[in-house]
Length: 201
Image 1: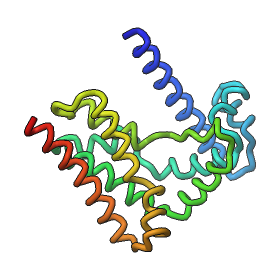
Image 2 (image 1 turned 45 degrees about the vertical axis):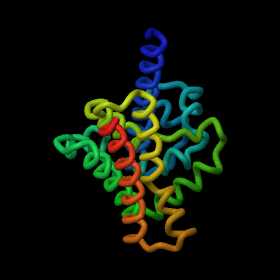
Image 3 (image 1 turned 180 degrees about the vertical axis):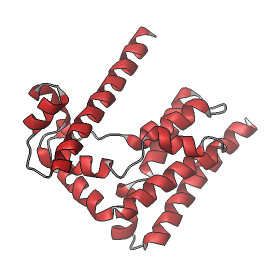
Image 4 (image 1 turned 60 degrees about the vertical axis):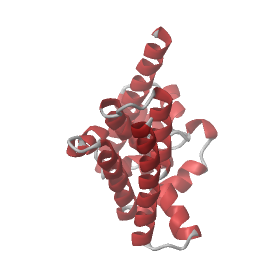
């Protein structure tokens, strides 16, 4: 239990630090001037070593900071959906992130290309999808056990955002509408299987 608490505390601290870094980068972006990771670290009151643990270069940080301006917080997304049943909430989260990816497709594609060419140690991202799903599943998971909750979070995350849209559009040659419908259908089938199995067990 202590290890779990410690792990959760570290995770929350990392999210707080990342949010602080993004906020400082956005402040510098708004000024319209060139800046470095060291400039952001100074504004965020963190060390150079710390910022390099999160971002390998200023291009990755700038791309994420720009996208972050157009993205609602996990709390705000969940608040708009929380009165619905579990399936509707998860599908609503998927719809938000898929529409966000389509509305900002070129920016997300550029961000993804920058991230993939960065060092492996700094490829971890903000995890807004998993955080939003965490909120939904922590309060409304029915009879799912912890492993099932974690697996559902992961598979739902895989079916939303720019990555599955790239596959559906570039590989499967689907248009935007077809892509959204396919990803929604896939998640609906997964939810139907999971929730039906729990209902009949």
